[in-house]
Image 1 (cartoon, rainbow, N blue to C red):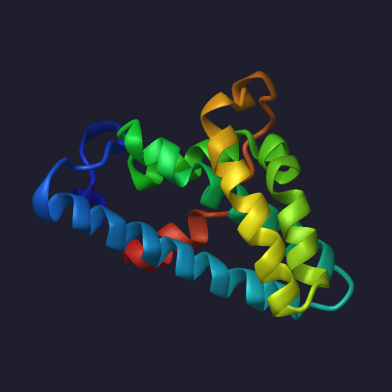
Image 2: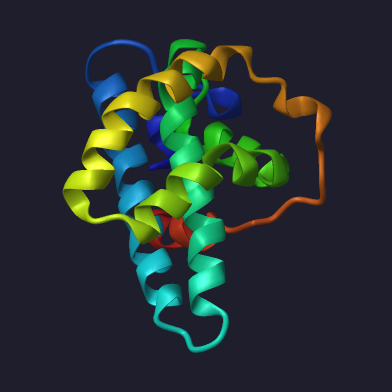
Length: 147
């Protein structure tokens, strides 16, 4: 898996390297989804923690295309989310809250309208101005996939 990315976490260009990087990113994504589902079942803190983590995941979805076009590798993308997590919780928070509250088809219709706006706004986002202490929420996923 680490071999699927170049130096500094940059995606390997071309052919099978790009496909491998895409598969690696999806594996990390799925592992994180399973982590969110597991945490959601915890009493007292499950719902609020699930909303926080889901917000990060919705933000990642919004920025993934932009970061991929800039050549950022999978690890570098998730590190940006961890480093600027407070910004990304706000960025993905509305979609996460809607996902938790709406029925599937209602959410589908709303996401069909909002999601392209989130993706179009991603290149213009200035998340580097809001730097906080790193929140290493993706590290368990990287450890499980890289093992």
